Image 1: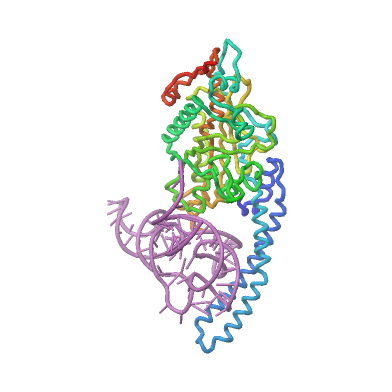
Image 2: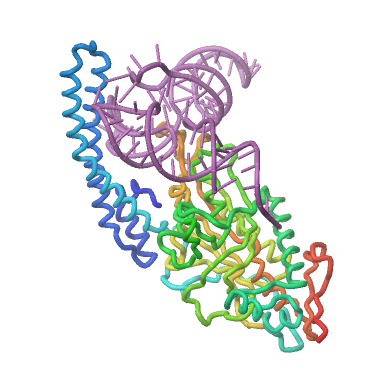
Length: 431
RNA sequence: GGAGGGCUACGCUAAUUGGCAAGCGGACGGUCUUGAAAACCGUUGUCCGAAAGGACUUGUGGGUUCGAGUCCCACGCCCUCCGCCA
């Protein structure tokens, strides 16, 4: 949700921002609804004020003289009620329509409408050189017994995997490695629920726009989340936080479920694009003045994790047209895959500014910010929320396999990870 | 799945027959101070409004009533006990 006051006061700015995203429907309609809503609200409130006044007078009237006063109050009350349904209808319509408005792109976001316009900011690390033809992760994984897609297809269908043997040890090592790193940076580890109510999906901005992306448990009205971001963001919904406690940082570890509708034929083999994978995610609730610093901090964590694991990658800044609905800015890190000879998105970081906070009603009180001490509305303001991958386990394994492979099909473990795995290489299974 | 208890503002707690939701604590701001503590004053849910002011808010949604924290109905959530269960 964006601030309707901003839309009302500066529609040209909001329109121009949405133009950068490729245009957003319904802005004029929302402006009209908003004006009509405020008009009706003033009318209804005026009538209610008179009704309240008349009712208060009854309490002070001697009991034997009340009949006339009650009749008077009743008349005024009925008048107010005739307008109320129209007010409620307009309010609901406004709410519904405004829920579809995406966040405003930050000024630093590059122009462009499609993924072709995303900008490579930097390339980091050395691509490994091989004196043999490097294999892709599917060929390597089969030889190493790390995962089994064929049997998963039998059990669950395509795009599922059994992670097996050394693959499981690799997962546990990566997860613990990422959590240890984040705990040093004041993140509290959390294993969140992966089944959530509709309001959590709506609040994070995944609904109403992207309903086809999720598995739904109809019977219980619950959604399977595609990232722990959803449950972490909703964790403090309807709360008023203390400014002194900010930033509040969580490291979520959970399975992620994605329908991958419309991606038929892409990455059909292996671990790259699956319906279920595990991920360690960074999430932060912070003061609005600090959110761009916090964004850099989350990105720095992502890059240090990649660098520690010696994975070459490029930093890709998403253009305005390629942002999700809730992000004001989004930056991905893409690992180089020498076997597949291409880059693969390993992490993504977003600053959603107050967009999710407004939908989830996460506010804070206290402290002094850029807008000075708050004198109105009790001094509560919306926090800013940010999220960023720390380690998407499946894809991280893909990157490790391809970059650390040897000619005989075995794979080295990067030094930083060895204390966690307890072994320093994975050898092919005996045939 | 069954039985019982509960839900009031940031927290804790009141509110006679239905008649202006009080009080304490915490936090924030201010006064005072060399600095602080203490004390005192103010603020401390949402919305409309330039302001004055007003409307809404006692888990949610309905109902009764001139008027509901209070009475009635439905639902949600939390707690306790029983059953089942990794």
